[in-house]
Length: 196
Image 1: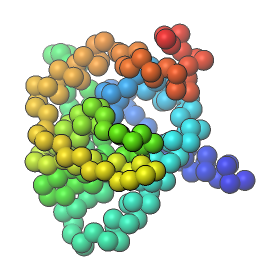
Image 2: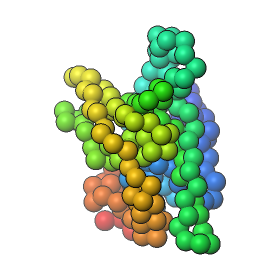
Image 3: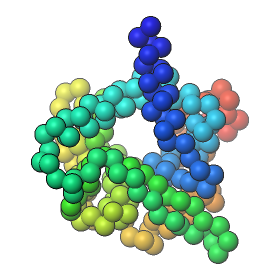
């Protein structure tokens, strides 16, 4: 019974984020292109425990922040951000995302990890992109692990030119997989003819 309730809850949360045809999430830039396509059709990631942990952690933190942060409308929880990026003169995509917390001058991302050294390049890039899209000067990643909470400061946002190049490479090259280790953990590996 509980498992069914949790799976229904997760499916509902994921269904809230249905993509448009020419939409790319900021987080898509740092993972396998084919997995992102499969997710739009099959939603298998909803059955993975790490997805449940991430969703529950974000829900709990959202409640805590709304209760304990100063009553300030300039602090926003998971605001929607979007930027139209032209790949060429005839084709564009919408790059979209939801930074966890925005303060008047900072982007804050919260990540759960089982690793003792959880800092990942993709997380730093994600925050630097959010800094650019929201015109914030500072970025912080809080890593919650089973043993500790770590804070990592991101120095400087990505430039417009760097973002344009990154999105264009993603759209044109369709990295499948983006990293060699992705296939081993992918819930779509049995459906994928590109798996390594």
